[in-house]
Image (cartoon, rainbow, N blue to C red; front, side, top):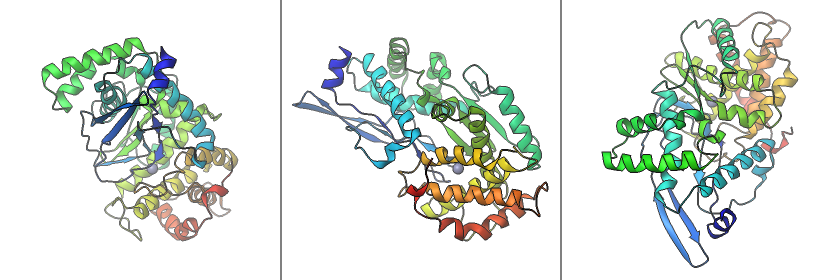
Length: 385
Ligand SMILES: [Zn+2]
């Protein structure tokens, strides 16, 4: 039956995980038209809007889940990175898991494949639901706490930033799902009952819903001093062969870089206005976050990783977004991002500076001095893993 349905319904969910949409403008769950080809002859157009219109107006997001339910994904050079292979694997599991529990009701698409993502963002960013542990079973909680302490000390920012976990298990909680619909959507009570029925059906009927790591794959920083990192993005990167602790450290260090930018937003000058949602502005602030990341991760009083380790990780991390060059949230090409991190490493490990922790301001000025040479770095495909 499952295979049959798969044939009948050419449904492909392209999880275009992009390093994107990283700005101060509102980030909304995309409105996506979902044409589902049923047999060769009939087709239904299912407009799925989702039930939430989230305003992340004070957030910088790293991973934009771009759910494209339209048709088979065109093969492209973007798919040949280790990360994209892993992402495709979980993407297909999610599609299969959805279809295996699906009776064809189009409403289920917007609930399970759109709302669930929004609900877990709300859980992590606004409701502090299950945010106090890291890893599905808390296996990284101590590590993340230590790393947070290290970042606080390094950047002289004690107790100023909240780091929140995000987990697929949150979506097992139907009472919480109900609460979110009641408080964050306009859906009337009877519709919420109907939605909860669908949620329960999928939660019970599919081993991917909500267990699939995509449902907890957020990574973002908000202006109100919160960082959210989902288990799922760690899983995806870990499955490419990377050490999960390095993954946690690197993403944390990068998001911390954004918090440093937010903290200094009033005072720091840039060649372009910061956080104004143009590709150039986003690229500039992202490259600075990468520079800050490279500085902290390799600094003798920071994370003390050697450059090779950092380079391996960041190459994978930066390749997540290498399809998104035209996106207004474009974070920079992988080569530019790696060059930014390398410049941060060079700053940390230059003969004169070794062991001394520069001020946030001094690091910012050092970045600006390198910005032109970083953005002039060669084409993205020259970065090999
Ligand atoms: Zn960023």
